[in-house]
Image 1 (tube, rainbow, N blue to C red):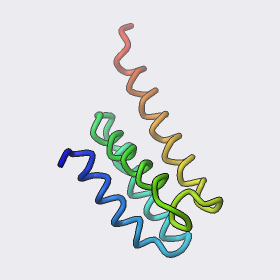
Image 2: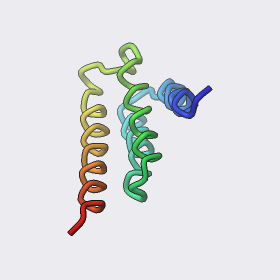
Image 3: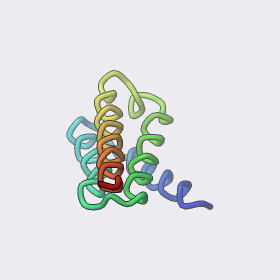
Length: 92
């Protein structure tokens, strides 16, 4: 099993515990929290595996209209982290 399989399984399992909007908000917060602390590749891949788990899960937990904001939020956070990493690694 690769690290991505492991991350994906963790996210798929915890996503299965989501039963209401406040759970989904908490889940998304937990997913993107590492991106606030580190600019390493690992937190970006952690968030990406969560995005994959969310989009591959059938409704109602997957990308139903009420949870599309979760995909947008995670995707935007990943994009900002990548852009920040690029800016910090550019030479002056």
